[in-house]
Length: 52
Image (cartoon, rainbow, N blue to C red; front, top):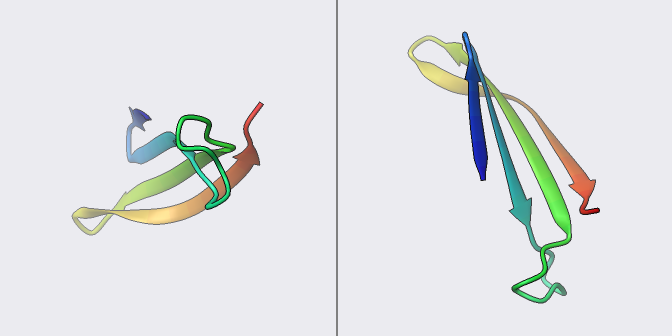
C-alpha cells in the first residue's frame, strides 16, 4: 500500500484480490482518492485496474 498526501488531496494505492485469486497473487490494483472536507477525508473516486 502507498499513501500520498498533496495539500488537501490524499491518494491511497493498494492491491486487491478477487475471491477466485490465489492469496499470494492479487489481480487488481486499486487507487482511492480523497479530499479534506470539514475535518475529515471525504471519498472522491475509486479506480480499479487489472494488475499488470
